[in-house]
Image (cartoon, rainbow, N blue to C red; front, side, top):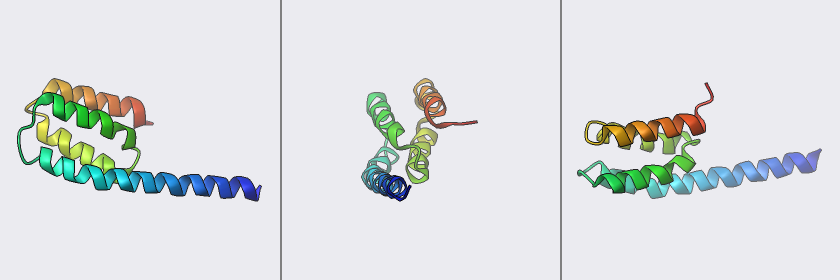
Length: 92
């Protein structure tokens, strides 16, 4: 049983590191996107990629920042991204 526990702990540790790396990369991208009006395809591409990491609260916060910033600019695409998040991560 200790081997299983150690394996799960190692996997969880790696996942935390991956999520931390994703956050550190995306925080600059999100800052840039939210400082200007980017083309819809750029915003959509970024959100599509971020979705893989939205199980992490910090990355989810960045995802939400982009959605809030662009909701009135690209409402259909943002609604699609929010629904994609819900389908992937929302357990309720």
